[in-house]
Image (cartoon, rainbow, N blue to C red; front, side, top):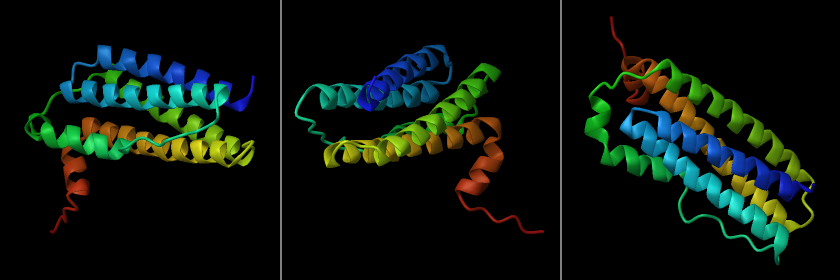
Length: 162
């Protein structure tokens, strides 16, 4: 199995996992977040297949994962402000997601160094950037769900004065 085939397999597994997460979460914003990540991972999968089968042309996505998340959060800001309790399963899913993203980043960094050509390296570099953004999205979401008060303080750069 070559690097692009392994990448396609990893992305297909990520699509399935994040789809399950979206189906199981009770938090409407969490559901939209996971579905947005599903779209990203599906795009990576399709690109890996295409790069492996054709002329190896790759076009990065028009938006970044962080831009997509910002849009979701901007559209649902009021829902975020209403504290929706998270379940242990949702927090566990986010921990697994962060680990998956870390492993994907490590794989793609190695793959980029072994790329067969510039187009393949460009593909891997773009996927690395997306996966790093996914990791930060999951990490930020985990922090928010685990302790919303501290999350708002740090995100809004609040200063606690005594």
